[in-house]
Length: 312
Image (cartoon, rainbow, N blue to C red):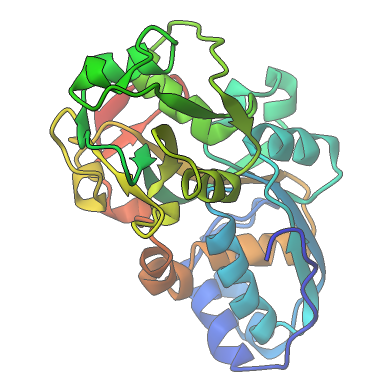
């Protein structure tokens, strides 16, 4: 499903879909607010949007964006939505450069771009996802502390017996630099400490981690919850807390990220409409959870660009 362009879809329930978006009165990339949306309500519900929406960025919520794009194109057959999941850094760089209309990211743009670039973008927080360590099926360890994870992913702990497992070398499967999932994981485990440990392999995408973990013994890596697959590997506890969405909402499970979709302040109509759709009840009310994510509205805490957590 990655890297494919979607064909136009047959019209299905356009009026109802667009009416629900307009009713939200959301602020899109072009800066239209609730009053503007209300004024344009009847006209927007009667005509279809047209154009091309392109994106790149975080592979962690690629499946959510794809699923939403399918629904959006069903309602708007004159819009094409296509893109890739090449990592948060590449997505943010691409949207800042104007080579795509949307940049998907697990991290705030401030952490990847220059301040003058960030000022030209609009952030849409579309979901929240937990991320946690995963181990090969043959690994007997089912709980690691943050300090133990720090030791493993810095190369200081190299054998499973050092953390209560069997006598076997730990195979560390890391993500490449620029990955938002890696940045989120390292921020939770290492804080402000710099780390340049590569591990035994550095993989491009979440799907690559899934595949490699399913065919490698004694391995450890990390994935967002939506990519967990207990037929291939085991997701384990951190500090005794299970990696579940319910434990993310109150920050008892510490490794999580907000999923951002950035666009230019002068983005075109199709891009703005698709981003508004991402925040509509059609997506937030059902699709987000179906795809393994958490609606932003369900979170009891928030994170800022520095990673600081505070109550809503």
